[in-house]
Amino acid sequence: MRRREALRLIGLLALSRAALSHGSAHRLNSIGLQLYTVRDALEHDFDATLGRVAAIGYRQVEFAGYFGHSVKQLRASLRQAGLIAPSAHVPLDAIGAGWANVIENALAIGHRYLVVASPGEVADLDGYRRIAARFNEAGEQAAKAGILFAYHNHDSDFRAIDGKLPYDLLLEATDPKFVRFEMDIYWLTRGGQKPLTYFERWPGRFALLHAKDAAGAPPYRMADVGTGIIDWRDIFVHANEAGVKHVFVERDDAPDPLASAAASFAYLHDLRF
Image 1 (cartoon, rainbow, N blue to C red):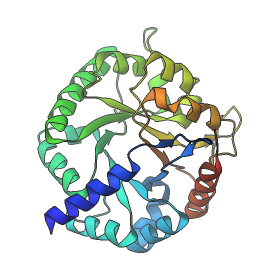
Image 2: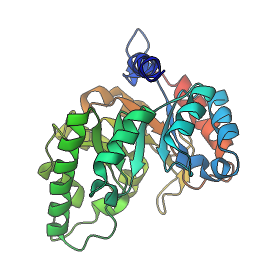
Image 3: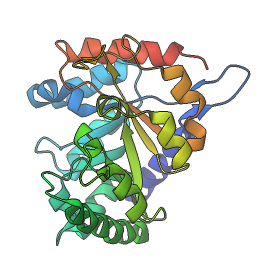
Image 4: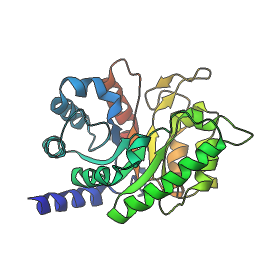
């Protein structure tokens, strides 16, 4: 059973590995959902919520916590919903002494990526350098087991310390062989930066994207994809050079999370570039 399940997951991942499909009209080939978007619904009814996510049209999800479910339960729930989970967020302290166990569970669930979502409070650039060294070690250990490691930004990564953006330091100080990046377009925009600038400066580093939109500035309120100021068409025109393999919709503060997920999916599904 383990072997058949592993082969099924490999086949599904092979079908959906490239986020972009290039034909006469370019479009997104796969659209995922970061499950933090529907966290309250998952807490209330895990399996039913996954079913509703799949009914919208999503075939990929990214976890941000497992809501008390075992590896066996997660695999069964994903299979029942017809979903795969190429990626999961983990806290920074997950890359400590128990990292090997985190990697083992990730492989069993079917993840391809493990993503640290935030470094927490970091006082100075030396703190970011230490984090970069930890990322390199964790990424190398993960790579040996067949898992890819990545880092997800927030707007705090674009607040200069001694004239240096922490995000730039992390890109410079991490090994591209072992550390990818999941660019959250919203938080980068709120941080005053432009995605295409980073695509050009750091080609191939951004294996994953978080798609959520921003209303006008300030204060850059979150918005469903396609309803804000971000030029998604331009981003996806250049996504191949960035190295994008997966795109996950997310909105942290949606009044109706499933409706928000549906609206963003519909926009991205219809987008041509």
